[in-house]
Amino acid sequence: MLKINLFLPVNDSMFVEKLSSKDSNHLYYRSVAFVEQRFSPANLKPDIVVLNRSSRDATVVDVTCPYEGECDSFKKARAEKEQKYAGLKEWMKDNNYNSVTVHAFIVGSLGAWGPENLKTLKALHISARYSKLFSILCSVDALKGSHAIWASRNSQTSGVT
Image (cartoon, helix red, strand yellow):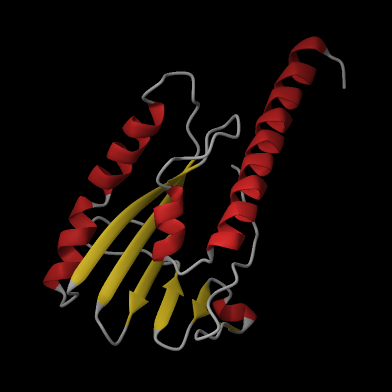
């Protein structure tokens, strides 16, 4: 599984505070919380959930890394994620969230960048300047991950390391 470990800078009006190691999956802003946890009713675990406590808005982001061999593979991946989290969206609205948006963050296994990723980063309050850098870093990490998978499979079948 490809894992991208980057801290995303945010606007000056927001303050990031990393909690104790016991709560290492939680990042808090003044009024927005990034939480990695399971959600009812289907026990789903999206990659990022942004909850704005004051406006009762929520943004759900799930990352996917499809193979871009078909021209519509990104559209299919986006539709799958939106369908997967449709129940969570309704559940959150039933639990007093005014607005809930679901985003699929897509980086192809060969490094292609999903065309709607910039909208997702904007919804997360990521600056345009850092979004450009982040797109490059994600693409490079996807290529490195794909190469590592290819190399491990190739060395197992040929006996060469």
